[in-house]
Length: 144
Image (cartoon, rainbow, N blue to C red; front, top):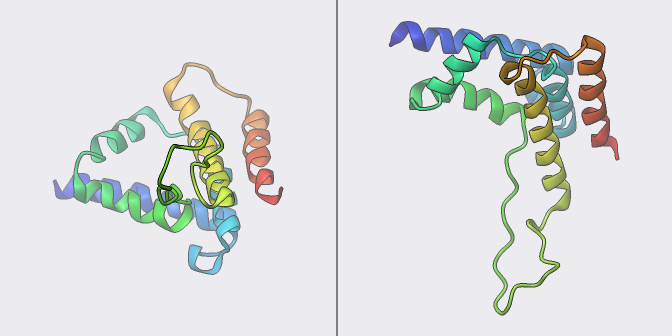
């Protein structure tokens, strides 16, 4: 178990080093949008199947998952809180959150996660320029 924990820690540390390099600074010194842009740009580096399987299996173990969650908490926006329920019939125009910008940032994170997983889960390989263009397009959406 200690060896598996060390592998998780090594991979999570490597991922964080990539995030710091992409942001040009540690998470503590980066703005929320700089952290998400770095997260998006690092998403062009797909995981190997072995890494993906290790992460998936690790998600069922609290100790193994904790090293990944620590990095994610520093760099990626969490789901926004749901709005407080309003008494009465639900409005057709009710928002999923009271903070649309937080919801937009979370959607961009999900897009980056999808880019990262795409090549890990399919036999298709994107051209590196296409991966870069997709990551940049997601990151650029932060400025809108």
